[in-house]
Image (tube, rainbow, N blue to C red; front, side):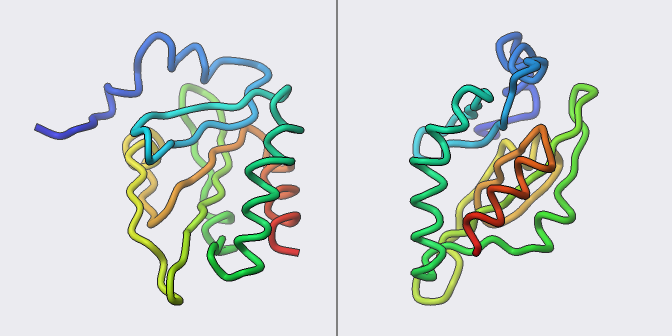
Length: 133
């Protein structure tokens, strides 16, 4: 029996999250084996914490974000469009094998890494440019 199925993510609570007007993004927390979300009010904290850390990791070649993953990561779920940004952590020049069942089962996208699914392409692109510049 699989650990996760598409129905795992179709709980009443999850559906309420997908319908929040102030939803910034949804993503998979690999070390906790659960999905998570951020609201627009969390954006400043997210930028000062995670995103700032990712920028440093990107500069040190410990993280990569392939531009083509961003361009191809546009999905519809629950009548809403989401724009993905896949983070791939690196070690010795190779990307680490990290599974993201949320992206695979809910968004229908399989990638090696964790994908953050933003409700706004503009927000996704601003964060991408900040990390990679």
